[in-house]
Length: 339
Image (cartoon, rainbow, N blue to C red; front, side, top):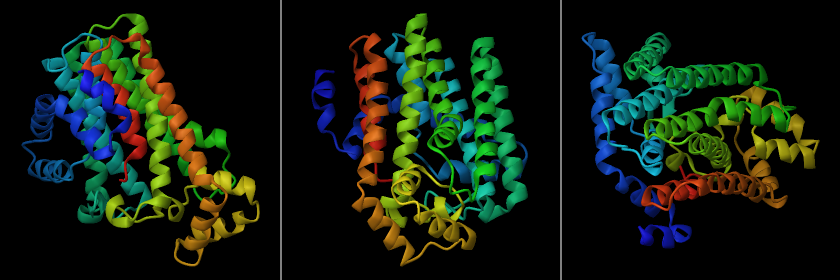
């Protein structure tokens, strides 16, 4: 326990991931088994698509957050309830990715063909819907109106975020406030819900539940800021999808919002890239060099760190356990990752 706490500031992302997920290795194995069980259907095509989605992998950060939060407040993250709800959160996340890829016409997801590229939009839409409905059917077994309310609210927020983002596609004049509103709805509410539900299942006091909820919200924002940076700093191989995909899809994220604040004339170039759907040299080199030259990459990274710091501060109400220290390390992991 002390070793984890003492070394957390010096951990590389890979080392941090091994420590965090190693702590709950058996629980995450139970989540994988439950996900496999839930994604199996007597309808053959559903089982086939479910196997394809699960095999795509992923970091499984969201179910891990729920399990760690349950432990961190003194509960049992390995309980049947915790594993079941952790799986629900991963199913909701997977459904969201499936629908996002359809909307974005994405060909790749985690270095594999996206489900819409491989099986077509019709099958992908229906599979995403099936995952949503299966997740809510599973959550009903909890017989908790409080948890159902959280799940309903975060699902509505995610859908609203996607719709708002659709109205902003190709709009280079998006403001910081509009950007952060989309980030909270599309990403941070799910993180927040994972942590809050984990705390509820762990028997948290009210103030611990609120702290877990706020921790997840701050962590989710930090996660998305880091993700948006990767679109400019990571290569296609490590990213698992086309680098620069956000801009090609018409999405202007915080680095480009700040760049326009510093260089208003760059807006025309961004609009041209989004209109043409092409982001190659010399535009890629020009924009990347301007982001570095004006310190924008570091500015956004520092903004992510500020949300990560806020997330860690939310944890101060929790006891000094290895699970609290794992939650304490996750913000470093999400903002320092390279994919």
